[in-house]
Length: 276
Ligand code: KIV
Image 1 (cartoon, rainbow, N blue to C red):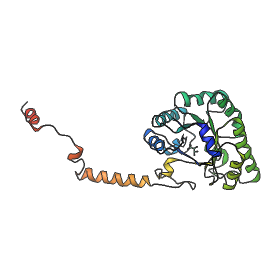
Image 2: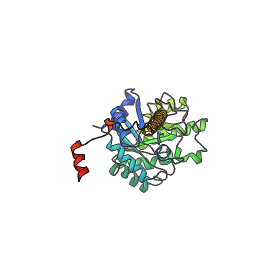
Image 3: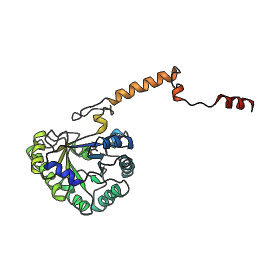
Image 4: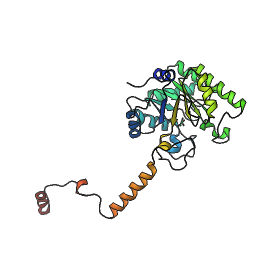
């Protein structure tokens, strides 16, 4: 049985921290699911960490659906959330069609989209149509040009008040949870206390109801840059470099493959072949 949005909401009231990670492919999603992580986001961070774009902006619906399907195939219990790409929810008709694609074609159980008050009506319609929505406020990477870079948000009293209003608008619109990205820890704490739905932080301090990380950051796989809010629990890029060097050396030295990695046929068959 998959985790439900009601179980996620209950975790806030039970004060059980909610763990969430991104995943983009079958094998990784399987490991995350087996670790009993309740929420998997097929994030549009796919664009930077998997597809090599400079930002999340070029990511398309078709790319998101392709990766969502792979993640869903790798999971049995985690609730899979599809991240709606840039400009795919600017009006209600587009938003409903694209959210529905995540559920019908992708097999996800929920969608996430960026924005607060300005997208609240759209969130409400998606939820009314039966699709659970996770909000995302604070630093919203799809608006990076408008925000002038990847900066901490809500640092002035006006900006902090706007952030709280955005969070409340999402809750009223029926969102089941909201991501707070790059928000000062004290502000995240206040927002978390004022909301009835869980807050999931990334660079938003320890007092959110849960935490999300980009899996390539926390595994030390994405080596272009390490965000300040990320902690590397492994250094997979280093392990992969070592493995690649070992492989090259062994192939060149004739040490790989060995008999163990090879198959043989009966010698008598070879004799027949030689005389054929
Ligand atoms: O795309 C993504 O991975 C995200 C998380 C950072 C929340 O939106």
